[in-house]
Length: 268
Image (tube, rainbow, N blue to C red):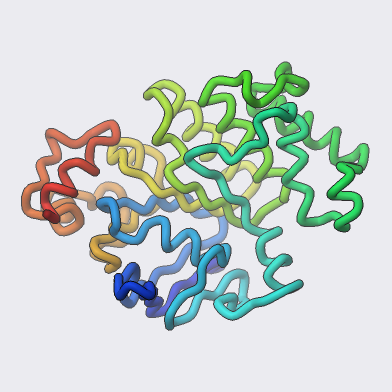
């Protein structure tokens, strides 16, 4: 498979001197499902935000779909963001609007400013949004206000909005952190199945090790901004996990999203 995304020796240092990323290098192939794990403050969110340029990098290179993106501006940056869908932990929906209106927001980057402001979506876009909502199991809620949905339903709307962009890459920043275990599995099933059926690469930040193992083609482990593991889920043994989370790590006590607490203790 062709390489879609490549980090080469990427560093990110904030003005307060915090080194969020230190020499990060990795590749993601087209259609690949990759999870990033690590303690709080390890740089997981910084990696994602660097890809869609919600924040810049200090040095190094990021290539997406054959294009160096770290210095893109204006129209070129907007074109990049149209090809990258983002799914957030807190959903980032416009709660007073309906489900279909929120899904259609995924088309705003491809519309002119006047049409976008007025919400003048094409009939093709409306049909496409309804079809995606049906695929995600919430077609019956198309006219329901987003504020009236459960957490799992809201995240499905977030997925629909991202898919409306026809992205080549999905970035998912802790997409199941706020969900109960059953809803979390449902969302991960939908992400994996939609990515696979559409040939979309997917990068997911996770704390839940069991979920990362079950759904990922590959797992990247970060610790204090450094890649300390990049390999198959089957290679994620206790020795590797101690490199990621610290010597105080115990795998028996870390499942279902509890890794963070142990990691913080290990790093204290």
